[in-house]
Length: 482
Image 1 (tube, rainbow, N blue to C red):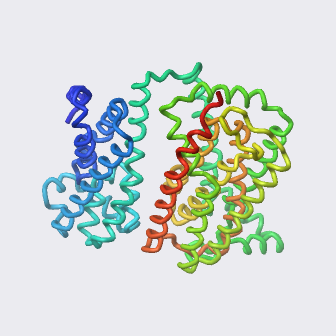
Image 2: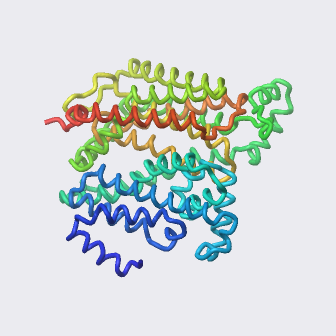
Image 3: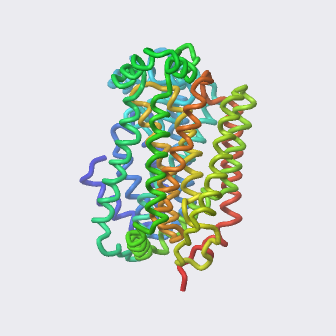
């Protein structure tokens, strides 16, 4: 399949929308099928089919369902093929034509086990071979099925939503606000700068970095500083003596930035910019985008975050990770107390741009701070188990919900720009401080087991139930003020 006849195919689908469901199923199936996903431009075809689905009015849940079913089927067939050719994948055509990919897939699977089925779903070079390798290495059917279905649920929105939203916008002749691309470019550049400063720089402060080793030698010169260094160093055998320099520097840096930002916000220094940003997002609002941002902001509501935190604490407790559970509980209490106290102390009013403006104070954004703590804690625990380039990939992936939560509050007009930035900095400071405190108990390995899958499934079901019961009311509450 080549780009030359991709355009005629999409043009034909636009005039025959009844075939869109089968097309989404087939393309996602081939995209997930062993080796075929390397040859077929599945991502481009999925984007085109999703765009047509949005343009022709296909319900989003239906589009996600067909794409998800195709992905599950493709991985399932690949798994069965791997089981069939156990021990001779390197000799069977067409797998024999890709020996390097098979070898890389085997190495990745042996390192990550069942998690590789979920991780591999989103990593292009190994996506088409991981289910094949899982079958060849005799992974149990039931275990693979759970990972296969669970990863497809997360995969479908990532690959379908962008095209679907573009198609829906085209159908309604969406027009961006003035200076849309300029502001978007500046925003993306700012996010890239923050990412480089707060993540990539932090990753260079590990035990093998020059700054870490220099500071370690300095601290060892004096008895008091050496004791402090050893007290907060990890006790894990594979990282014995590693001081949490990364977490500590993040806590100090984010905390200092938050204090400076709070002063600027409370003194009204940035209020003119706040109003310009609110006007920009108000011009951006469109019926096509409203449901998505309302769903995102509902996912960051306090009841959702509290239930998610409780499930995480229960899971850690049942697996015997009591110190981790206690630190998660402490992080939750600190976050709630800090948000409530700061809102009372600053007394900043919210923008009056929606039907029912929330009555609580504006600064900092509780949705942004809470979501940041929840996902930053998860990223810190998970990334700690990996070395090298895998860490920044985990941080980057789990930082997306934080950004989306803040963006939803700005888009819906219930927070100022300074509120969202303040919530992000507060969340990062709390997470880093708690993570630094936890470093000396760091003996756990957060692999996926049956209890983790059960709790994750329960959390997903409760989230869907919450969205179903509050979505209609939220659409009315967050509608633009007349």
